[in-house]
Length: 379
Image 1 (cartoon, one colour):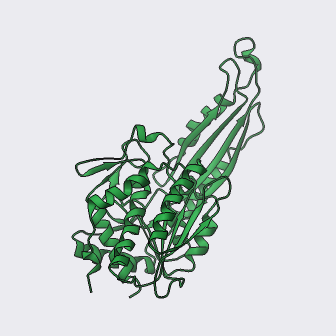
Image 2 (cartoon, one colour; image 1 turned 90 degrees about the horizontal axis):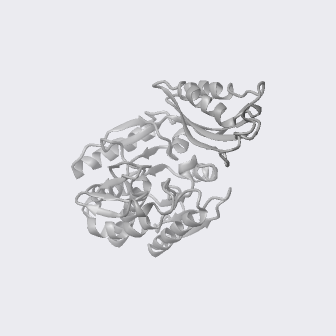
Image 3 (cartoon, one colour; image 1 turned 120 degrees about the vertical axis):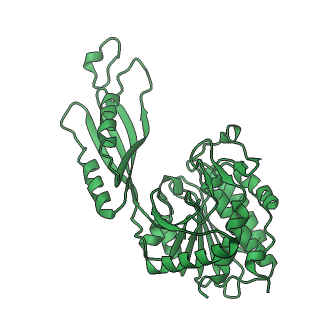
């Protein structure tokens, strides 16, 4: 039998297949755009002979895809490939960040986070099917539309599906050293609103109470609470419509990351303590979606890492494993205690920026890793 690591993975073929994925822009808040991406992927998975289910979106967000891959025991719980198809880049980003290869670098919105990894793992399944090689366990693929905003609409779907499986693979981008993630810090989001009193900014400035000024004062307070182990960042700020009006409403969003659940709980208390309606300007803080701590060193996950490192050694690299900040849907499966290997996707830099790119040689490297995992997990 052909060694799965020796399957004919081809860099140029993979780049050609990736191009339409990247040029189908899919920012989270544009449900129609996300669904165009899901259309494309649904067709590709159906072509592989998968039984594909389209799960309608909710909360105004896009759809999800669940695909049961061909296997003698298809439908039984085995390996779950879990990824998201939404990106942080608005439609039109291709004009500034086109899909383009320059030597060992290839750029494009969402290429690193995480369409590249999703594509590579599907390509591994494609090559295994073409070679007539069964995966060690049945494989289910679940692609979701809302990871970049904390997975508000699909967390329950992810958790329910994950509980049916023995192993979870999350091809988020690799860590800077190429290693995997075996635990993740907790993430909490907060929605803030200040409400003041409007007035004409030129005619009667003193009569107004600026919601913008109050929120700006709190930006310094909130980001000043940051420590090495628990961070706070104001990432969204919306207010004002007319420059000649004192703004009466200002909205903001805050992201907090903590290395332990205890630190996150303390950070949540600090944020909620900012609620204040005693003055002329009201400050309201509401807790948003949360990603729980995924504690590292769980036996099932560490066994997956050992296997991944064994496969990596045969390919020619070393696979390290560490906890990491930056949430993913692996937080949910890891928190449930399910064996989860995260950040096993492509290598690159600049995710969430206009320099987002991957290292082209990581495409074949990671496809071989994927083929090895798909054929050895559970054996």
